[in-house]
Length: 195
Image (tube, rainbow, N blue to C red; front, side):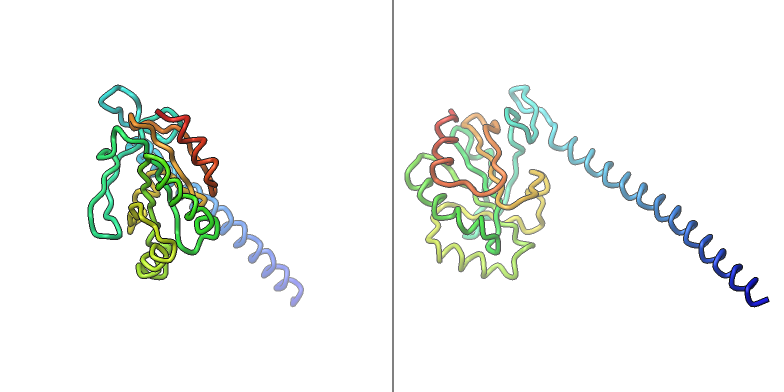
């Protein structure tokens, strides 16, 4: 009798595990479907066409998606306001060692060349906004620090590793995308390739 009850319990547990596995697989598919739907929505936003008929997107040759963020000094900055200038958009955070390593080179690049640097800090990943202010002062950064408080722009630009940099030519088109830190020589090299 005990053996029969034990076998019944084991089969019951096995059956329950199979049912849970099948249900969790369906839930995963539903969640994956939601993610795909969200990605398609984001893609639609990014794939708008510019005035020149060039698709807005995240590939080299596409028009860079426009955005507006507040700077550390409280001003508003919009990417399209810099049309006619070569722009480096850099996504970074104070806790990121490669970001810290490239900042002195970015400052030198900004001082040496006629380039606009929009350094977009992912504020939601920081312990406090004061960390960003302290970092800017410590490194004597003179280029604009933009605050992506809700990570809308970093999501729009599909930023994964930090730092990520987009080099935008004077026509507003993406000329290069760099995943990871850039040194001064690479910044100059990419700058010279842009018009």
